[in-house]
Length: 303
Length: 267
Image (cartoon, rainbow over all chains, first blue to last red; front, side):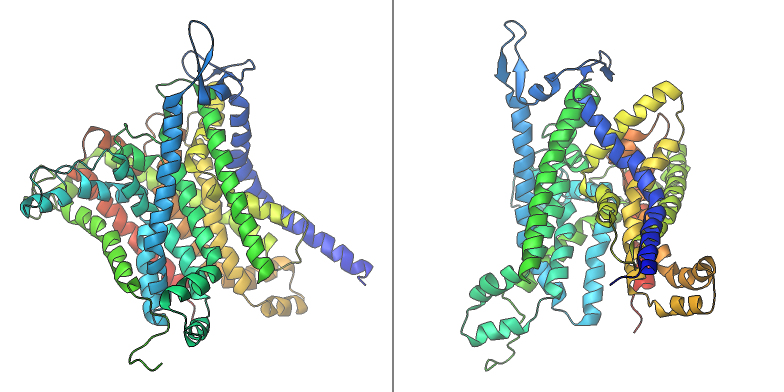
């Protein structure tokens, strides 16, 4: 049973916890969380003529995501341009996540099975691209795949192709760029979970005459699942909201939702639509995170 | 077992894929660095080794201004983020779980979970109101925004350091009638310092790297190095941009190496 003094001490400790955290919370309220609520409000306002908004309630921005209002008879039609961009964003983000997993898993496995000293070095090597400026990495990919880039130069020189491959400014270029840029985000959590994996389970598996494929599918994958889910979320979320990579490698034509949102605040001058699209993106991301939390909790419950 | 050289943890093809991945990660960066030393006028042709694009970037006043602004912003934002993150880490570790602790965790990590473009647009809307109604156009907005998204990057290494620290020294200090403040100053803080420096470095690199949020929050004439570089690519990629990239890359590698030296566990 807790004594009165202990309860008092706990209460003081609670207060100290809040007090010490409050400066950080205050900055976050002003520079991160508060603005999100204001954005939600803006999505229900009327677009101003020169950008910004006029104060008045309207749900046009929200219907505008999927529909356009016909100028003549005021009926609603499905807006396929918006749907195309939404679909492209989801498709490219999913492809990026899957491909990053396919090459990221062996990479993480490789790092985790090195001797301790070498492991630190390989881990350091994967961290450098992770912390390298996103723009620099996108420029780097640009340098490889553009019309006069390294890839085409080499292929032309080798006589394998007659005219340069047109990779840049396509969906494929954006996919390639995003995989390159977000790959470390897949490898790092995978490494963390494989590092904790008990290799004796493999011996047990082989002793029971499992093939390597069975061992991979039936033992390794189920055990390191939290890392797989975490890595997938970490790649999927920023890929879905990507702005810089599609802008440079997609050349403004292969837009993703991030670029489209920006357009509404610039040339489009439709702030409420931009705000509504941002909230939509936030909802998709939150849904993905909730799925992750459920997965993570279930794993912990079993373990 | 019976097979010679059978290693339990080896899976066929994995090493090949991993080595290819490392090659693919480094090849583009390497090409970029090599081409930043290109003496020729165009990117497509190699015109011999030269520092001319570095010299050109160095003499470009826009680049100079953007560099100074980037470094100043990253330093101020990282200092603020580290200070508040240290306080928050002290407040949320090594005590019994309290009401709202999860809430504080979620709040602090929030910038990691929301896509950057969403935060950027929300800040554009929010700060536009201030810019119109208060008329203030200064660097304050960028400082606040950068300090905000740097907080989790400063918080995580500091918390990790705190959690691995031994409580006994502080208990001993308290037993010897040191006040909490004296205990913090003479015992906790010196022990925590490597974590604080590591956190500040990550916050610094994070701020230095940001493109999207800066792009939406900055007022006219407040280009940082990344937003300047993004603006340049709209016209045509120039070797000068590659030269700037190489310098920025070198800075990142130096900071990261220092970071790992600081956080490495002592044997």
